[in-house]
Image 1 (tube, rainbow, N blue to C red):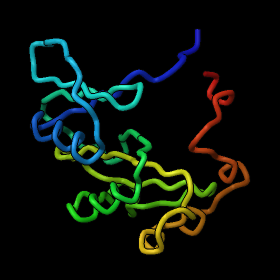
Image 2: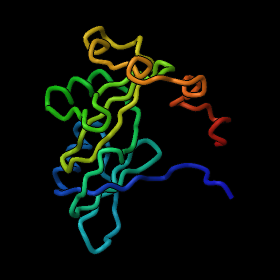
Image 3: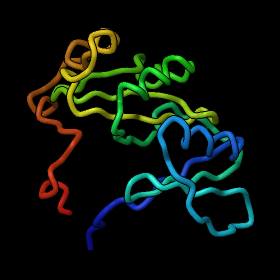
Length: 160
């Protein structure tokens, strides 16, 4: 029985209020009713999915992350740059162009968790942002199979 879609992602927050404000202000997520789990937890809506924040000690692993797409990538990028939350600790760069032209931006939340913010086409970005992009094909050798990778899959590919 295959899974049919991703419902939510849960991440740790050192300070629940600070993390909740971060996701609301940077990404426009909306607080939604949250059950009482006996600890500090807040659920947020992100489109048809949810982000669950739980206040607890955080052990940072720079490779663990989740990726989202926003409707105004340029504004999010500029705000992330202005507030100093760009995260180049995961791969050595904070803004990456995939072989298919998609762009990935890495930022860190108040607890140090990594978020990947995706954009479908590097060519639609302003010149100053494109100048910050690291092209994956220039950074690492790509096989024919690597060059076929797609960040955004069509519904039939995703079996939805």
